[in-house]
Length: 411
Picture 1 (cartoon, rainbow, N blue to C red):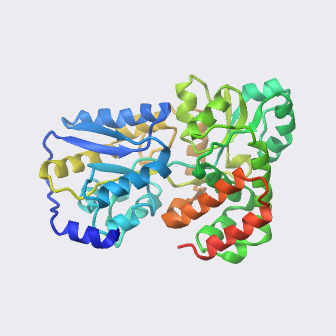
Picture 2: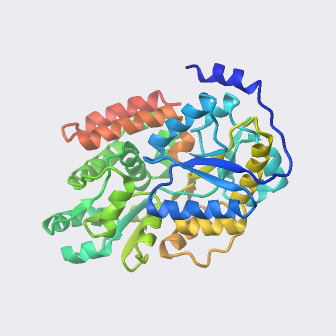
Picture 3: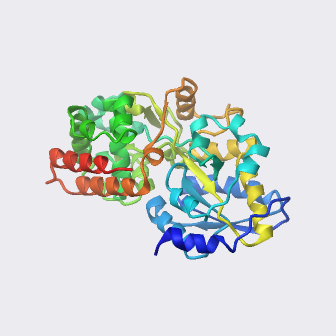
């Protein structure tokens, strides 16, 4: 199906009314289905229901790589939901260009989103041709190594302070029957772990040259070769994980079956749900303890163009509710992410969230691959690292050559 031609025909028949919302049901699709994520999304639903409207939950299991094609299929098939989650960045770019997503500029202007959303790059990622098409709800950073304090105690070694110490502790963990590094089978997990290794070990400038400038020469060069060596270490340490979903891998760390996991700060929701305390039961190392940088990726909600006037009005209410200060605090404390508003009180933040807030306050931020690469380029990268982690016979050199080819043709 030609997405643009179909959408153009569909958009002709659709109106975009504005105004005060009456109570109505609004289906919201998302991929937040783990225990910690469900607790967080319940805060959004509760806040929207308090407006007199009703959040109809459309959770899709399997994380974004599974959910996004389903969401896109519904939109292009003429069955739009009331609102849908994407990572803010380029994932919904073609849908916006096809006229399937409504322009939120009036709502954003009325509520001063440009003044309250920090960093500004979050709203920039929602902006196409000067118009705002999404409401960012959090800052999610990938750059974390989560460690089980109990696992290292059992192995008789100190909790690592950085990536090199973690790699050095792997033999002791294995001797104790513990998987050093938990990496689930979903392709985005291994690809994301590699991206984290680039920032931590090769640095911010190299990361931006590769993913921002699409510099094939850098991607094929010695700095990235070092990262592939580290990815090879990660592949070896993750042998025996034998789980698929990211939260199952996180649970291995929670239960001490794995020493650590490279995963975004959404893992905090799982630790919290399990009753574990940051800095006591588990340790978090931003930037793998090497290069403390926070990516300004995260989640946003887009609002499809609807024919129903009342549902269209309810969309505006939801967009406003998502950025409400109280909603921002309640949601992000349970999600493990940072708020997009720079004017909210997070006194209840745990040890790991405080580390993230401190890095953010210092301005050590970077755009993430969702913002720098198209969905197609991201998919190619995920396919490569899924194969690399699953196939020990693929050498780091072979994988780097394929990676450089992906970067050379990336958009």
